[in-house]
View (tube, rainbow, N blue to C red):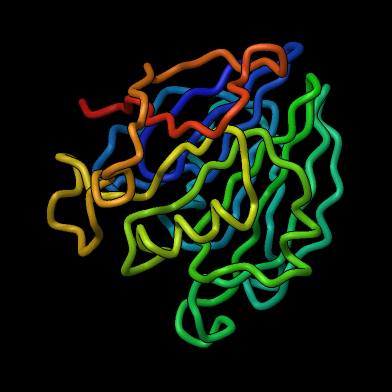
Length: 221
């Protein structure tokens, strides 16, 4: 399986001739809009920096984590090529959605891997949410704070879920330097992260035995 990071919270999974684009951002985010197609697009919540479906080439199937204009969670149980896709209901804040609304954590299963994208998760997880997410091989997790979990909360979520690989996202870079979020360093400090290219290969056989943090390169021009 291939995983590509474009910046912010946007990724692309590819396997078996199918591809899934995750949380495509809009122009206001500052990263370049990639010229990319997909078999399907998943949207964790309806904010513009995660839901720019119109930018995706082709005629992808759109799988939204929320329904009724973001007022409620959708029941996600989809199949796209080799991928099984499901969702876990969460919030964008620590006030049960009163400040920033609802959010869905998507789970993608294929090739013997179980991968989660946390969207704009804004709180620690309940025991029921941890149970619903289950065993995770890879977790894409916001770490920048202000709008989402900050570095301390993100570390606690990692301890709750115990994935083999953590991929930080939704943090400040040279592209969005004026955003009120923190740099990735605040999360990775003291943790010995590994820098990785923008596109990586994932397989159950080659994942690390003990937890690692992989900081992926991203589009910038």
